[in-house]
Length: 210
Image (cartoon, rainbow, N blue to C red; front, side, top):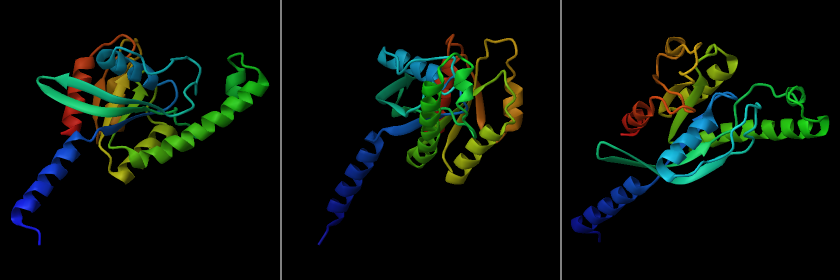
């Protein structure tokens, strides 16, 4: 027969385990929005090392990348999570995109297949995410089929979301367009490359996960 004291101990250790469990925090968005640049910035800030290579070639990240035990701190608070960098989401991946940047046909076709698999894996991984950061290029029109697809998938799963308007250091940046397109989410403007406004970004993560 379980006593009241045993129940209390069980609840205590269950709660303790839950608190220690690392969140899975996923970086999602279209290609070249700056997901890997942001992942690298987070990892350098808190781990002293980068997560992966950055490229101007679309779909350069074609596999899920994970950095475990990232711990950020702000105003006496601490947040631990596993950071998951995902391939850029696209509704269509054509090998000719790779030909345009000087990649030979055989490799271009292989990359296109890998990128397509990466997109499928990214969508599958949504079911494992506790929090998602959508990284958008703030110099581009946010009203795209890809962005609407990403947001629709997240709303269907009821996952907490933070929208990052990246590249605010560029002249054509327009955060208000992103805020207008997706008013249901908080939008924080940053430059992952230059490190602008990262303090606000980290504070937004704490608000999203409390």
